Length: 166
Image (cartoon, rainbow, N blue to C red; front, side):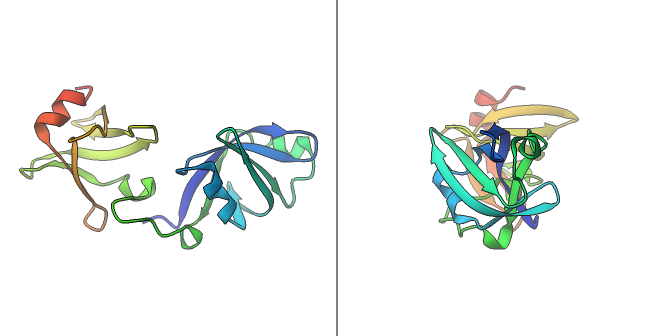
């Protein structure tokens, strides 16, 4: 498991006082208000303010005093310490915990390894199967079980074949 979780991506500076507009990768943009500190790159920043509007968040960070400083953060990931992240309800997982899991069928056949998950209404998983990247939507009935402790994502093979870009 990783020590940090990615919670947002810096889109651009907002205004002239160093505020940044971020695209949250959490369930709701309001979730970012729970963090007192964030990391951008290896630098830890104290969150001075966080406001949510229109699906985005606007962060003011200690040490980012003007638009020029904020511009240097464009495109970077915003991460938080795993220990500061809220406990998830049963059946919910952090993407960082799913990446690297083996993808297997209900019968135990190894298909490949999860290399990325793109959050969306229906999350899109990217798996490496036989040296090729394959995408599949986590549509109803595709994923049967996720066990991050064992590092295994189990899928219904028939349903997987229907939605995967094989």
